[in-house]
Length: 365
Image 1 (cartoon, helix red, strand yellow):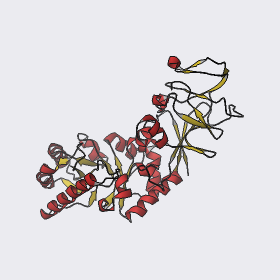
Image 2: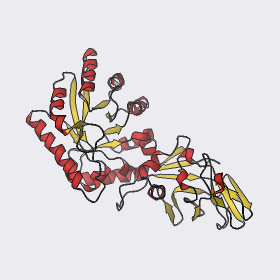
Image 3: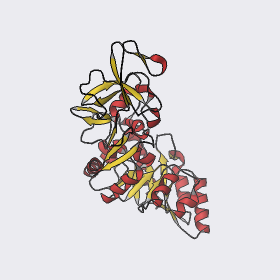
Image 4: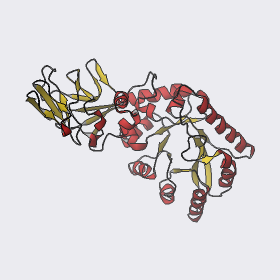
């Protein structure tokens, strides 16, 4: 490990294990692996390459730029773009599958494809209750029929997204599923069919087999997290660092901005080169913990942009060779992204995707 650096270790064996859980849960259904937001902070290119080696045949990203980056790095399998609407030339040039959620965009894509004498496959998004993007149920049938009539568009897939499939109470999720299935049936009556139908995010993969259709769309579970109570997944990412400075200070010494931590005894303080610019939330000030020499160590004072101080007074044999674990295991102790999320009032998704670009990713296979 390099000195004075933060390293994100990505365990590709754990990634394979989690993919195996998806396969077991879905019984051989097609899988679109979601690698948006730099594969939830894990590194989109390396994660995508590994998943393709494991048999994944489709990827999903949020924006066109993410897909273009993967294409230019040699990724050739189909990539669906979920949220863009205007990057028509890029979609055609890089053979991407755009997601349609309004009729005007569909007509623009058709016109451009017709001019280039090409056909473009599209994914159609239905809003069954998420309230984000997608054709609403009252207008979906009419608008999709209009899209299906466009000569240079191939309606390859249709999707929707659950708002709360991770809750124990599945009442609303089941209503969303019912709405989606009803629309599919109505479209079939009009001879409008699709190669793929997908609605199951990670929570639905794990808990709603009726939502698996012919393809599922796992994201967070690939990286080792589901929802509270889920077992059998392995966290893929560990966050590690070294000690930048060790110093012994007298009782009454203020530590970090605002003097929110003042030593109550002669104390040994370790500074580690990790801060909120690296994704270690400022909300962990005087609250977070890291692992050093197999023991939990408290954050002392406010988390800074580039550094965080921890109180290592009670840690025996502390020295500059002692490794710091921010996320991961050391000895019998373990800190997960879920633990950090609980301390900061958020979700593991945000903890993982917040890990900054200056944090070096190292891949273990």
